Length: 216
Image (cartoon, rainbow, N blue to C red; front, side, top):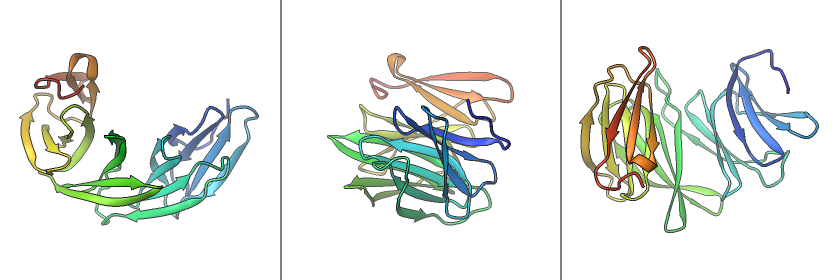
């Protein structure tokens, strides 16, 4: 196993043979080979990556940078990573780099939360991201999940509220206040149709029951 002198910020598998990772305060993206432990470095547009998200259906790797932009790499020529596009968000005093991909009727969509109070939904067509919808939310977003059955996006605000927005309507469907206090993250439990909301400071998880079969 390869050892790093710096802190690893993000990792992602990009095939059965290769993996990607980034290091704290490094303006480079790395591709490692499981078979021979070789590592190649690639420029990450003068800002280090805080999150990596692989889209196997489209052979794309999304790198969310500290400067609030997203770089798209094509992974069909690994270990090489050609850049095919870059999305720039408005620079804020605090960055939030969240990405979730999902399919609706065979079409691939990506939702990003990278600015104060804004969700952007992108339609991925032939390796290109086209802006599909902008949703203005009610607070700074800490986490998000896609609810397949209801075609909604659930977002967790820094204030401790859960909000549910329709993908196609862009409208706020409902809000829930959670009791966990200072929250940082959430996760979807499909088998129980619940969302778990985590407060890392007191090691507490609150479970929120979804209506009907929202999370399935």
